[in-house]
Image 1 (tube, rainbow, N blue to C red):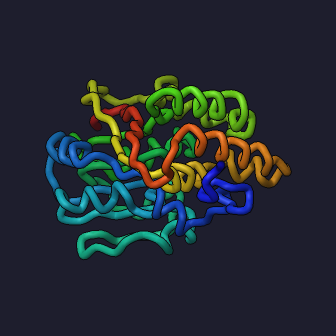
Image 2 (image 1 turned 135 degrees about the vertical axis):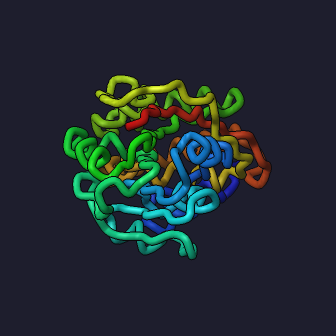
Length: 253
């Protein structure tokens, strides 16, 4: 019998900004700690493409002020307030910060959408000498087998055609992006969660590829995957390990 937690009558894949904020995995605390330690000072950090502010809030633990910027009003509407954080709607190519005022610029899971030459010009304009730039992404999640086998099939062959072309940049850890800064090796980090089945399916439901598949009329493909995964998972309330490798291009001005 299939648990109704993943039955076709329940639509796991109709998600908006609130779901994105709820299900997206948090970055490890070690990431913000390392970024702060590598910055020339802790006066001001700018998180570009901040979404709902996941990394922005973590930076606020280490910097006097953090500016979270995103072009999406919906994402910013679900960002969590913090006394040291100011959010603003702005594109990556027009950063509302003063010349030479910023100690750190981050872009987490966002740089593949930028006009990079214009973004890099803005980074050089607002960054103070020695300021850091971090382009951060996390790769394809990993589960324990046999769950991982079914997930990887879904990711590569079933939902794969619905990803935008930019997704390949994320999966490669931005390795092919031009990066005209003095580059330094970043530490090996990962995101690790212990999720119930509804949390994993809720996260998958935030993917742009899932939205594209639904809009193209492929709801059955998504529901079939949810049912298959539920059959392999067992009790949907059981927590299982989910890991994402973290990738970073790090450089200084």
